[in-house]
Length: 255
Image 1 (tube, rainbow, N blue to C red):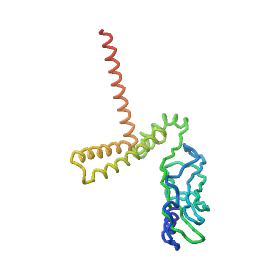
Image 2 (cartoon, rainbow, N blue to C red):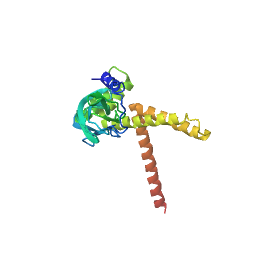
Image 3 (tube, rainbow, N blue to C red):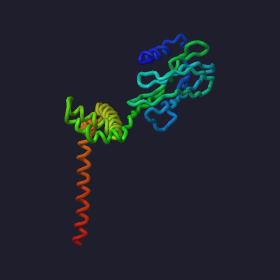
Image 4 (cartoon, one colour):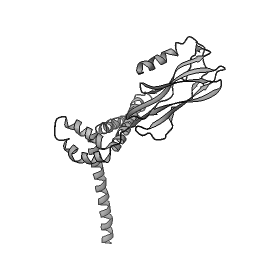
């Protein structure tokens, strides 16, 4: 039940035998799927919800697939009466990694005949789940595993990158989430700077913004470089704070 199942589901409805058009409101209610818990934790079992509205005069039989990226998590068949909104859900055990969860209607029938719907897919929910690292692992990493970055076979940058990902799970989650936001912003700015109605000054500002995001994205995409830059920034901020405090005390002493 991988990409092929999803691809077939999109072929079933558009080429259905029963070609009568449905109401533009019939199908999924507007918006993404939602979860039974506000925050998702690794190996936690939660419910994924969606809702379907039937704006027709006849009862509908729908098959709803809950999908994570290209994998069908589960399928549910429901009956929705005329002018009824029905909630449909499935259980899901949270796994680590990046996720893009949504629901699709892979089959719609009215009185036994296939039916064409417009709202056959919900909006996607994208997020990442990072495995929590036990304190004992962090303690060991600060000794023998740190030496493993400099010793043994393998590329230094690759070994250092893996070490940071293993031992700084929370900061790595922040780095990966920020990287996605930067990438999204870069794409939007890139599209905006290609518009023809922009003035030369606006194009220059979009140019600077775009290539600034390119540099920042590069820093966030390499974990070793990200931590080096972070340490340098923290050092400069502490140095500035220390000099400011010294200047204040020196003025008071001179008075």
